Image (cartoon, rainbow, N blue to C red; front, side, top):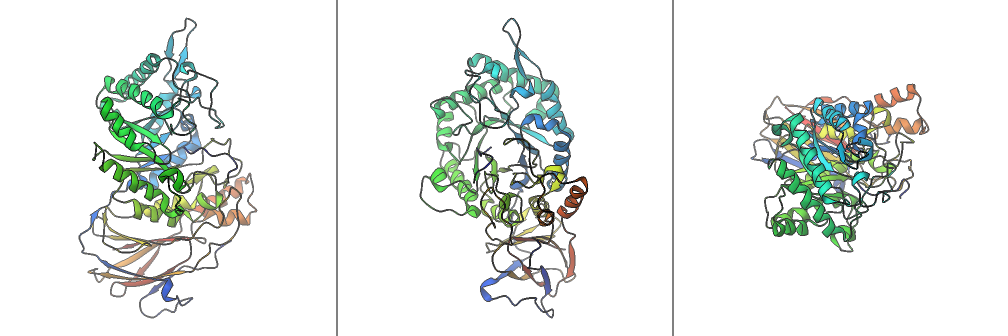
Length: 519
């Protein structure tokens, strides 16, 4: 999870129009510069297109998985995306209660909350992506060294690695005894979180982290070699070549590489350059870099997992709360496809307390669902993009994806990317700037009777923030207001239409996302 301080940095005038190729007049005549010509061959041979962006989500810390609203939110996101894994910090934190020392100084284990947390996930069809963090104060080399997060996890190495190894061994043994090795071997075990930032107090950072990794990986594999373990779980796509060299030289097991990146990470931090990389491109630039690093390493086929990503690592309400996330997410999928095995959007819900108890439903939280179970535009973006097929068709465009499902249905994603209205922790009211983008679409070899079903996300569709603005952005909405916001946040009903000889046109406003099914 990114280190971010609590304070870091109306309906749209544009309508959405779907126009048939011949006839209907446009609300506004688009200029040539704003027209995107899309040509698709429905019979073309495509490439595999696994849904890497929606297989895993992050969440607030482990103990929050016991809350009712957390579990309701996970059900909603699972229904919308079918995701398979959830990752969170703090399974070893004090509030989970795993480790304690008795009056005679002996280490004891209490798996009560661990079991309730993992049982709750599995009952909802979701597996744990186990982040092995943070240090239980009982085992810490300095219990006073705590991270600045509101819940203050301990970030130090263990005082005695024999006790750490024993805890990892007991933890893995217990999981296998409770769930069986066939189940546990389908999980992932990731060693720590962002050791290159303030989440790790060992010095020097890298060498002491590698010591922690070596002990942890060996302890897990000693319990059962089928357990999957990896790292280095770094921020800013860091350390991957060093990590792979280390595990080779030290002969330490590693089953996957994991790292993180955010849209507002800087080029200096990620690439050590002075480039100005836009928010729209940073995540996939980093994915591409690590993909190439692994290909050039001693382990060129090592699976790559970006176990955190989002458009921002800070609480920016004009970014993560708004319809901006629709085009940002679609473009990220387009750019990253084929270069990463799995990506974990941070996070699925704003049941989240890193900066303390939520003070306003739309404060720029990372989740797809705001406090009080209000779906954000990002939730609708994920639900819409889930409809994409498993085969990607050839298409030369920076504003569109063309896919095909196994049953032959074509699914298109079309978008009009525009920058956020505001870029600070204070919400800026206003409409997205930019021109309406006109899409002129021709689909060859489409059955004559084919029809289009169209889903849309923009300022006027699937956007609870527009109503929240009209309410005056209350910190504590009434129960009636919450019900209204939930209704306003629901995905807009799709529109059905006929095509004329495989041809259709549509206008998309700035920050708009459209998904079209052609059957």
